[in-house]
Image 1 (tube, rainbow, N blue to C red):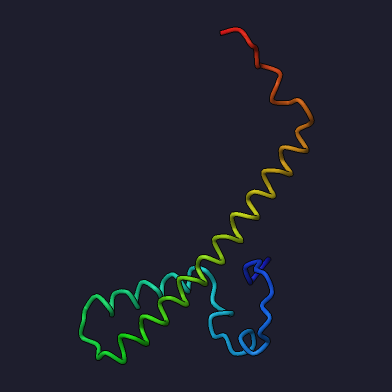
Image 2 (cartoon, rainbow, N blue to C red; image 1 turned 90 degrees about the vertical axis):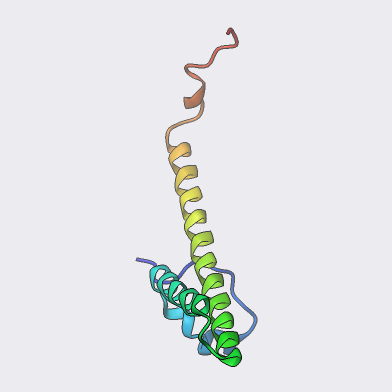
Length: 99
């Protein structure tokens, strides 16, 4: 099926070619983000290491968000398709104005 989340194309070709996150699934990115947060919470990293971890975590969070936005769009499209295939007026059969 779809290996990548549906996202808008970027204007930067080099970002696409050199982005190590592009090949990560949602679950892989989420799991790595959990590990990064754990390392940061330990507080045993140097300042430089902490900054690098923070930046990696931000990138992972953005990647996860893109996957979730794509999944929501797919669900919305599926719901819209299901509603359209059910027929027009299907939701009005049991509705009345009387209380």
